[in-house]
Length: 184
Image (cartoon, rainbow, N blue to C red; front, side, top):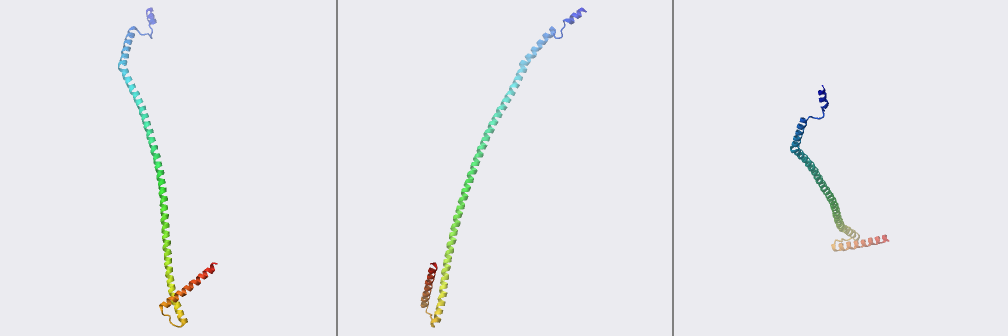
């Protein structure tokens, strides 16, 4: 039993035996070599691809953001231009409206003057016509009255015309005197 006790006493479960140690070391270096030659380059390649993809994504995002900023500036510029154009068009419309109103006023004033002139001309014509009609009527009444007063016929037209003219001239003078006396 001493031999078994010595064997168990010298046996440490944490320390491998020499054959296991040699086989383990050889297998370790084989696996390490395999990983170093084949696995590690693939892992590095995958990591590099991911790194490039991430960097490319960041670069593309930066480019997209810069492009979006440029588009935003263009939009703002176009919006400002549109506002200026709208303000200019409103001002032109106001000016055209004022011009149209001025033209319409001028036309209305011209039309008003034309209507007033036509009315005054018509009034003057009607007045002349009324005066002529009145002169004829007064003349015939005056001749008839004079014929009755004198007792003889005053059929001579020249004599009638002179008498009517004298009568109307006398009436005009009396009317002028009356107006002059009333004006004092």
